[in-house]
Image (cartoon, rainbow over all chains, first blue to last red; front, side):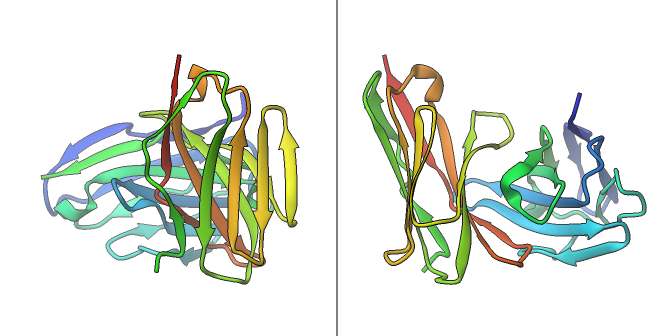
Length: 113
Length: 111
């Protein structure tokens, strides 16, 4: 089954404790993105990757890191999480440059205390 | 001015009626327009995309684009309770990786 998976799905952590949210896709997609969704602000792009070892900042990259060492994986790293990073995070992938076939993962709800 | 604006709703529509969702955007260079549906607690799901001025129909859904007026709309005919969700409008500049979303319109279909 073609899918984008994220882990963990729910996470409660404390300020400053490094964490990684994993994202994996089994569709051989080149493009992958991370978004965060907050009430009243909608979905905002954090980072995106156009292929292995090619990443770039989206609209709200501060406080986040990403890596793309393999085509299928695109982890989101929070080196020192803060309460303002409490949010719902979505990973997404697509095959080509167009967004007309973008698939989202199930989401990760992160709470930073 | 927000880059992509939507009325947050909630928009209530009787079952069987036409639901009309609107979205305006500020960047005249925008070339690709997308409508996503998001059920509560779930991830967004792409339901329509449109690139050219005019209408694009897919089943009960019609996307309408007017680049001169910088708006894109989504019509849902014969609305069903299962259409109750938040609808997100998203806009992309050609050749630009940035996809900008509106804040979404919450639609409720009343049986």
